[in-house]
Image (cartoon, rainbow, N blue to C red; front, side, top):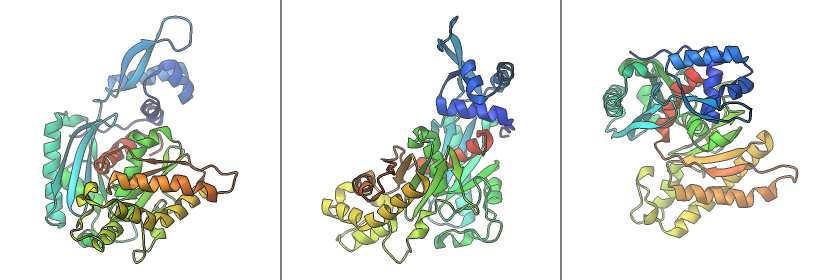
Length: 378
């Protein structure tokens, strides 16, 4: 039996503050949350009773008198599972309230048949729960991420108007009610999102986005996608497609994607890698690394320039399954070449490479239950 948090908006507001700011005194929480001290104290006691927050060390908070008791998230107050389904494998993890990974695993997928993928995900979840040693009654539920175009509002599951916008290799999945399917096989409440949007959530909670108010994530996997976080909230647009950056670059043309990288290397190497995860940076001649970065840079230039002009972001985060060295090459080119093309009154956002590993696909998926149940405005 999973835990049903059913938090009030004021409780979610406090948990949000503790997640982003770290341990805080009651006085700080009262000021930042706009809650009166008596209301805040009662609310903190409720969260303490439910095990979602704990009291830590005492510090002086600038006031006279005895030191203030700090309140912080209880890492073991609740847990979430994340399942990331990709073309060749399924990976999963269990995270705690602070995003700490308690267990992780990856299984190859010899087939993408839904029943077999579901069985693999269910088996993996059981192993993860056992490895993490958690009380299943503290498990909120499971987030699931899959490749493809946006699957609706965060956590909502399939688009109501028809088949899911998934890659062709997921043909058997397109007519399914994905949220209901995974809730059935995992026997848990489930939230669903596409891979790039889930990665954007992971960045907001645990990556470079912790220090950024508004930013874009560019996710380079087999395809090219992304997500937008504006004022520390996911932005989806009118139809859930905001941040689908790959739509700017047709599949028939050059685009910053893993498939383009594999095709480029396939034409220039005697024994090229077959899959993005097979790309070993030491095996690729240096001139080919720089050659591919220069090949796709015009796409990155146009997109980064547009985001700077249109949204005035704090940052642009590059993330993906391609080797980190290639992400750094692209980031360096953007930092060097985009600013001179901007009007003098505009400031180029920080361009950074995500510190999160490739496992952030499943961490991003696990962010969905936490976000949907504990964020002030899911």
